[in-house]
Image 1: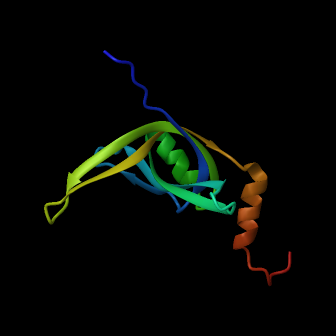
Image 2: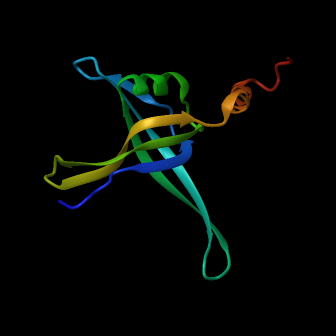
Length: 128
């Protein structure tokens, strides 16, 4: 049998708040989006910013931690595996979607990033 490996590492920012739900058996599952940016120079010498949007799913305690601490814009490092979901739409079309199943998530940015995010939400007209 040929060797194979399904492992991905991503660093990016959340595109939306975490959607934490529980299955009918009570198992936590968190879904959120990640934006991974890249800058390159095209053949004309112009710098181009490119964004790749990735759907992420986390399960069990990792899902609960994500739901508690992660919010839109937060930078994270995600280690996981690729999973292809396939289904048939209501109109009979076959559909598929590639997503990352998170196995480990490291929060990036630290307390300073959290404080900056909190200060952006405060009313600038209110004195401190």
